[in-house]
Amino acid sequence: MFEDNSPKTSLSELGEFGLIDHLTRFVEIYQPSTLKGIGDDAAVINHKDEATVVTTDMLVEGVHFDLAYMPLKHLGYKAVMVNLSDVYAMNAEATQITVSIAASNRFPVEALEELYAGITLAAKTYKIDVIGGDTTSSTSGLVISITALGKVNPEKITSRDGAKPNDLLVVTGDLGAAYMGLQVLEREKQVFKVNPNAQPDLEPYSYLVERQLKPEARKDIPGLLAALEVQPTSMIDISDGLSSEVIHLCKSSKVGANIFEEKIPLDPAVISVCEEFNIDSTTIALNGGEDYELLFTVDQKDFDKIKANPNLTVVGHITEEREGMHLVTRGNQKIPIKAQGWNSFDDANEED
Image 1 (cartoon, rainbow, N blue to C red):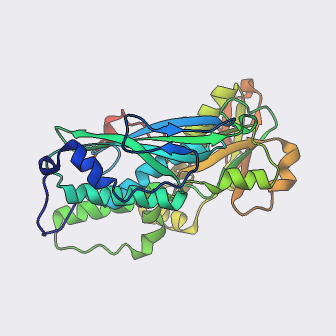
Image 2 (cartoon, one colour; image 1 turned 120 degrees about the vertical axis):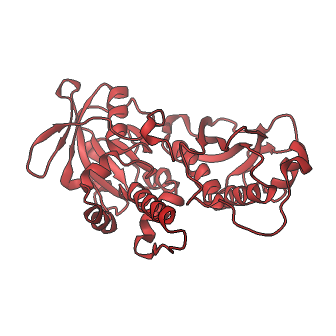
Image 3 (cartoon, helix red, strand yellow; image 1 turned 90 degrees about the vertical axis):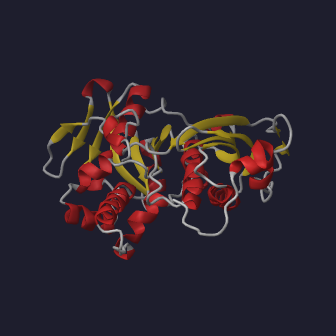
């Protein structure tokens, strides 16, 4: 979790307001729309004629992350990415976040400094403003809740309910790496339990581990689509697995879909490690989750605009609702798509 033998500062020494001042002393303002940030009863944001997008996600120790292998700085960074991804999935620009933290007394101030270092790094990298939040005590473990705000031209808002039959299904980046990174880290955790002196060699798995510990939200996609003059008909971020997101999108739009197995984008490292773990790579891409890529639909007439872009892959198309949702295998079999992705209320997903 936080391995440092230097003297530690207990949270009680600073108190709630002292801790807020301490953790936010390096916070900077990047957005002109931020009229008032941390330090008042509420933040003030001016977006004039643009629509405001708001989203919130909570990460709970033992459910969403394991501090046995998740560095606190990485955790702070990832917590921001989880929220920004939802903003970009609305075809919007992220502008501000609020950060709330509940921590037990087993965390010294220095540990929360590391957590906040990741948050401020994410804010600097993505040019968003940290404008407030809350800190409180926790009876057990660490809880992080972040609310992200964004802005978008009302005519450009892209929700889940706009897909129509014959639209193309498009995925950004590649899928499955974050889940396989988690499998590698869990394996090394078990090795460590048996032999605490064992030193893991994660170099061969660097891409997968990075996708799990330090994912990047797709800030580039709304701008890319605008530059290509493509207006998506629907969009959702891939946080719970491709299959779950396709189902969400189809149910919201009241349509069906066909996804073609051979079109699903996989990094060679994912294929290699799936073979090592004796796991089917298509299953991982469909159900793994935490990739924080985007899934969206476009009108067929926009195919020529996106077909050559290395960031985008057409993986299927939308059908009539009565046709259902299917994966078309390499053998040309149609298999119904089921939601088997991440479910935080599933006991099997709780950390040891």
